[in-house]
Length: 167
Picture 1 (spheres, rainbow, N blue to C red):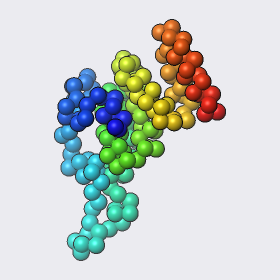
Picture 2 (cartoon, rainbow, N blue to C red):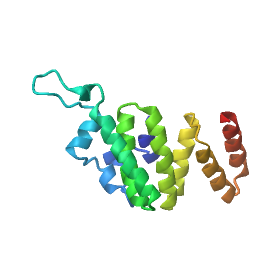
Picture 3 (cartoon, rainbow, N blue to C red):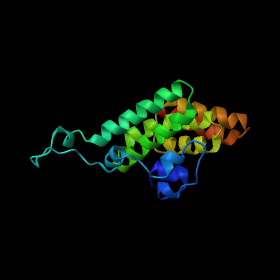
Picture 4 (cartoon, rainbow, N blue to C red):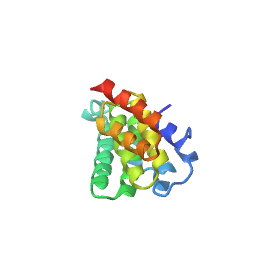
Protein backbone atom coordinates (compact mmCIF):
# COMPACT_ATOMS: atom_id res chain seq x y z
CA UNK A 1 0.00 0.00 0.00
CA UNK A 2 1.37 3.41 -0.93
CA UNK A 3 2.04 6.09 1.62
CA UNK A 4 -0.68 8.29 0.13
CA UNK A 5 -3.27 5.56 0.69
CA UNK A 6 -1.90 4.56 4.08
CA UNK A 7 -1.81 8.06 5.55
CA UNK A 8 -5.32 8.84 4.41
CA UNK A 9 -6.54 5.37 5.35
CA UNK A 10 -8.34 4.98 2.05
CA UNK A 11 -7.82 2.87 -1.04
CA UNK A 12 -8.85 5.65 -3.43
CA UNK A 13 -8.34 9.37 -3.08
CA UNK A 14 -11.97 10.16 -3.87
CA UNK A 15 -13.06 8.15 -0.83
CA UNK A 16 -10.97 10.23 1.55
CA UNK A 17 -12.53 12.42 4.18
CA UNK A 18 -12.39 16.09 3.22
CA UNK A 19 -9.54 17.94 4.86
CA UNK A 20 -9.04 21.55 5.72
CA UNK A 21 -6.56 22.07 2.91
CA UNK A 22 -6.97 19.08 0.69
CA UNK A 23 -10.44 18.93 -0.88
CA UNK A 24 -9.16 19.77 -4.35
CA UNK A 25 -6.37 17.22 -4.04
CA UNK A 26 -8.37 14.40 -2.57
CA UNK A 27 -11.39 14.39 -4.85
CA UNK A 28 -9.46 13.16 -7.90
CA UNK A 29 -10.44 16.13 -10.04
CA UNK A 30 -6.98 16.58 -11.40
CA UNK A 31 -6.31 18.48 -14.57
CA UNK A 32 -5.82 16.55 -17.77
CA UNK A 33 -2.06 16.97 -17.64
CA UNK A 34 -1.84 15.93 -13.99
CA UNK A 35 -4.11 12.96 -14.69
CA UNK A 36 -1.95 11.89 -17.62
CA UNK A 37 1.13 12.39 -15.49
CA UNK A 38 -0.29 10.30 -12.67
CA UNK A 39 -0.82 7.31 -14.94
CA UNK A 40 2.47 7.77 -16.73
CA UNK A 41 1.24 8.63 -20.21
CA UNK A 42 3.89 10.03 -22.49
CA UNK A 43 3.26 12.51 -25.23
CA UNK A 44 3.73 11.14 -28.70
CA UNK A 45 4.47 12.74 -32.01
CA UNK A 46 2.06 12.56 -34.93
CA UNK A 47 4.13 9.83 -36.60
CA UNK A 48 3.27 7.24 -33.95
CA UNK A 49 6.88 6.79 -32.89
CA UNK A 50 6.72 9.02 -29.83
CA UNK A 51 9.12 11.71 -28.64
CA UNK A 52 11.80 12.10 -26.03
CA UNK A 53 8.95 12.21 -23.50
CA UNK A 54 8.88 8.40 -23.59
CA UNK A 55 12.44 8.28 -22.24
CA UNK A 56 11.73 11.01 -19.68
CA UNK A 57 8.02 10.59 -18.96
CA UNK A 58 5.77 13.59 -18.51
CA UNK A 59 4.76 12.34 -15.07
CA UNK A 60 8.28 12.98 -13.75
CA UNK A 61 8.22 16.60 -14.88
CA UNK A 62 4.73 17.13 -13.49
CA UNK A 63 5.58 15.52 -10.14
CA UNK A 64 8.78 17.55 -9.87
CA UNK A 65 6.92 20.78 -10.65
CA UNK A 66 4.31 20.02 -7.96
CA UNK A 67 7.00 19.02 -5.48
CA UNK A 68 8.93 22.24 -6.10
CA UNK A 69 5.76 24.33 -5.68
CA UNK A 70 4.98 22.52 -2.45
CA UNK A 71 8.47 23.04 -1.09
CA UNK A 72 8.40 26.73 -2.01
CA UNK A 73 5.01 27.12 -0.30
CA UNK A 74 6.31 25.38 2.81
CA UNK A 75 9.39 27.61 2.93
CA UNK A 76 7.25 30.73 2.54
CA UNK A 77 4.97 29.65 5.41
CA UNK A 78 1.95 28.67 3.28
CA UNK A 79 1.56 25.17 4.71
CA UNK A 80 -1.97 24.76 3.37
CA UNK A 81 -0.82 25.29 -0.22
CA UNK A 82 2.22 23.09 0.44
CA UNK A 83 0.00 20.19 1.50
CA UNK A 84 -2.04 20.49 -1.70
CA UNK A 85 0.98 20.41 -4.00
CA UNK A 86 2.90 17.80 -2.04
CA UNK A 87 -0.05 15.39 -1.92
CA UNK A 88 -0.45 15.68 -5.69
CA UNK A 89 3.26 15.04 -6.22
CA UNK A 90 3.17 12.09 -3.83
CA UNK A 91 0.21 10.62 -5.67
CA UNK A 92 2.09 10.76 -8.96
CA UNK A 93 5.32 9.32 -7.56
CA UNK A 94 3.46 6.44 -5.95
CA UNK A 95 1.39 5.73 -9.05
CA UNK A 96 4.68 5.33 -10.91
CA UNK A 97 6.41 3.41 -8.09
CA UNK A 98 9.11 6.03 -7.54
CA UNK A 99 9.84 5.23 -3.89
CA UNK A 100 12.88 7.49 -3.51
CA UNK A 101 11.08 10.65 -4.60
CA UNK A 102 7.92 9.63 -2.72
CA UNK A 103 9.96 9.50 0.50
CA UNK A 104 11.51 12.89 -0.17
CA UNK A 105 8.13 14.54 -0.79
CA UNK A 106 6.70 12.79 2.27
CA UNK A 107 9.29 14.39 4.55
CA UNK A 108 8.10 17.84 3.50
CA UNK A 109 4.46 16.76 3.60
CA UNK A 110 4.88 15.74 7.23
CA UNK A 111 6.34 19.14 8.09
CA UNK A 112 3.48 20.96 6.32
CA UNK A 113 0.84 18.84 8.08
CA UNK A 114 2.50 19.46 11.44
CA UNK A 115 2.58 23.21 10.80
CA UNK A 116 -1.17 23.09 10.12
CA UNK A 117 -1.81 21.47 13.50
CA UNK A 118 -2.45 18.06 11.95
CA UNK A 119 0.12 16.36 14.18
CA UNK A 120 -1.38 12.87 14.06
CA UNK A 121 -1.22 12.82 10.27
CA UNK A 122 2.31 14.24 10.28
CA UNK A 123 3.49 11.63 12.76
CA UNK A 124 1.89 8.89 10.65
CA UNK A 125 3.78 10.15 7.61
CA UNK A 126 7.09 10.33 9.47
CA UNK A 127 6.65 6.91 11.12
CA UNK A 128 5.88 5.38 7.73
CA UNK A 129 8.90 6.86 6.01
CA UNK A 130 11.33 5.85 8.76
CA UNK A 131 9.90 2.33 8.53
CA UNK A 132 10.84 2.44 4.84
CA UNK A 133 14.45 3.30 5.59
CA UNK A 134 14.49 7.08 5.49
CA UNK A 135 17.99 8.38 6.16
CA UNK A 136 16.98 12.00 6.76
CA UNK A 137 18.02 12.83 10.33
CA UNK A 138 15.68 15.85 10.66
CA UNK A 139 12.70 13.51 10.20
CA UNK A 140 13.85 11.46 13.19
CA UNK A 141 14.54 14.61 15.17
CA UNK A 142 11.02 15.93 14.49
CA UNK A 143 9.54 12.67 15.76
CA UNK A 144 11.73 12.74 18.85
CA UNK A 145 10.69 16.34 19.61
CA UNK A 146 7.03 15.42 19.14
CA UNK A 147 7.24 12.37 21.40
CA UNK A 148 9.22 14.26 24.05
CA UNK A 149 6.51 16.91 24.13
CA UNK A 150 3.97 14.17 24.82
CA UNK A 151 6.28 12.52 27.37
CA UNK A 152 6.22 9.30 25.34
CA UNK A 153 9.72 8.26 26.31
CA UNK A 154 9.48 4.70 24.96
CA UNK A 155 8.84 6.19 21.52
CA UNK A 156 11.67 8.68 22.02
CA UNK A 157 14.07 5.81 22.77
CA UNK A 158 12.81 3.75 19.83
CA UNK A 159 13.23 6.59 17.35
CA UNK A 160 16.68 7.49 18.76
CA UNK A 161 17.82 3.89 18.27
CA UNK A 162 16.55 3.95 14.69
CA UNK A 163 18.28 7.29 14.07
CA UNK A 164 21.55 5.97 15.50
CA UNK A 165 21.38 3.03 13.10
CA UNK A 166 21.50 5.34 10.05
CA UNK A 167 24.58 7.26 11.23
